Image (cartoon, rainbow over all chains, first blue to last red; front, top):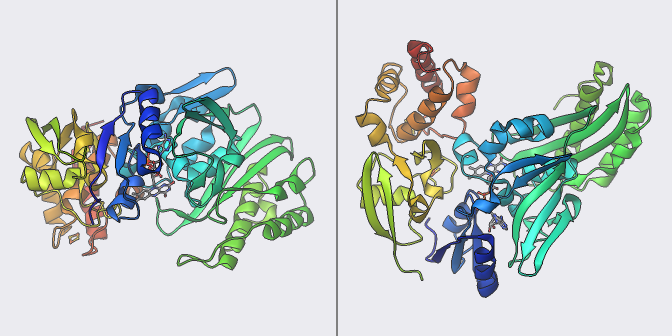
Length: 293
Length: 161
Ligand SMILES: Cc1cc2nc3c(=O)[nH]c(=O)nc-3n(C[C@H](O)[C@H](O)[C@H](O)COP(=O)(O)OP(=O)(O)OC[C@H]3O[C@@H](n4cnc5c(N)ncnc54)[C@H](O)[C@@H]3O)c2cc1C
Ligand code: FES
Ligand code: FES
C-alpha cells in the first residue's frame, strides 16, 4: 500500500522543527530515518497531515566524548554507531547490539533518535539505554529537559515525549575500568526483532559483580530493568544464588504471548539469557550455558 | 501544502529535475517517472529488499524513502550498476550458479551483494548470509545466491581491498 497524501516540510533547524510541531500538534509527525514511520504510513496505520523532515538538521548529528560522558545526537544513524571508534571504546555494548538491529540497508537510514522515540518493546537500542543508564535529552518550545532512560519508556510505542517535542540527543556514562557488557537475543532470523533479548552492563571486581544492570527486551511492554540483578551483586555466585535470581526474575517479568512465542516461552528464554550472561561475564562455565534454548 | 515539490538529484550520473508529490516514494519515482523499472517493489514496508538502491554510495530501501528526501542526492539503480559494468561479473556468476529463477529479487540481491563486496574482499558464507539477510527470494534460490556471491568474491581475489 501507499501512504495517504500529506504535506511536507524540510526543517532547517531544531527551532524551526519545534515551531512546525507547535503549530500542527498531533496532526504532524517527525520524519527521521523513516524506517519505522514510512512502513506505518504505507500500511495506513497512521496518516499525518504534515511530515516534518528533520533529516537535514545538522545540529542533531554527531558523537562526542567529553570527560566521562558520551553524547550521541538523535540523527546518528545505526551504521554510524556501528562504525564509530568512540562508541567501540566507550560504549561497546552499543557496538555489539547494533549488529542485531535490522539489516544493512535499514541501518544506513535508521537513527538512534527514531528508534528510541518509536519505542518498540522488542527493539535493541531502548534496552541498551536502560542498561547503560542513559539520559534522554528532549527539547520543547520552553527549553530542554532530561529524562533518565528508565522513565523515558512508558509503554508499547509510548515514551515521555509529547507531540510538540524533539528528542535531540542521548548522554551515557563512558564505560569505566572493570566494566563488562553482555548482549544476546533470540530472533527468527538475524536482524529481525527479538523474541527475547538481554542487554547488560556490569562492573566486575575479581569474582564478584560490583554492579549489574540487566535490561531485558521483548518480554514486557517496554525494556525491563531487572530487580533480580540485586541478588547477584557483591555476593559469590553459587548455583543456589543463581537459582534465587532466576526465581526472582520469573516473578517480576510479565511477558506477552503473540504469534512468535508464548509468555511462558519468553519467561524461559529470559532465564536462559540471565544464566548465559552471568556465566559469560564471570567466565564461569560451571554455572551452565543456560540450558537449551 | 500537499502540492508537488520540485527536486533535483543525480540518477545514474545524470541530473534529473522533477516535480513530485510528497507521498511519492523513491521506488515509484524511479519506476514511474524515470522508467527505471529494474528497481522492484514487493512489500512496500522494508521487509523484502527488492527495492534496494544506492543513495550517496550506500544501499537503502527505496520504498521507505520519499522522493523529496532524495533532493540533492546521488542515486544509483541496478540500471546504473549494470550499464557501467560494475556488477558484470556478479551477474555472470548469478547466471552460472543458477542463482536467479523468476528474477524478481535479483536487482536487490545484486545491490546488497555488491555493497558487501565493496566493503570486504573475502567475506565467508556466514558474512554473505548475514549481509543478504534483509533480502527475500520467493523462489528460494538462497544457496545458489550465496554460491554466486562467494564465487565472485574469490574471482575478484582481493582486488578491491
Ligand atoms: C524490515 C525492518 C526491520 C527492522 N528491524 C529492527 C530490529 O530488529 N530492531 C530495531 O530496533 N529496529 C528495527 N527496525 C526499525 C529501525 O531500526 C528504525 O530505524 C527505527 O526504529 C526508527 O528509526 P528512524 O530513524 O528510521 O525513525 P523514523 O521512522 O523516522 O521515526 C520513528 C518514530 O519516531 C519519531 N521520531 C523520529 N525521530 C524523532 C526525534 N528526533 N524526536 C522525536 N520523535 C522522533 C517519528 O515521528 C516516528 O513516530 C526495522 C525496520 C525495518 C523496516
Ligand atoms: S519493496 Fe521495499 S523492501 Fe520490499
Ligand atoms: S528469483 Fe524469484 S524471487 Fe528470487
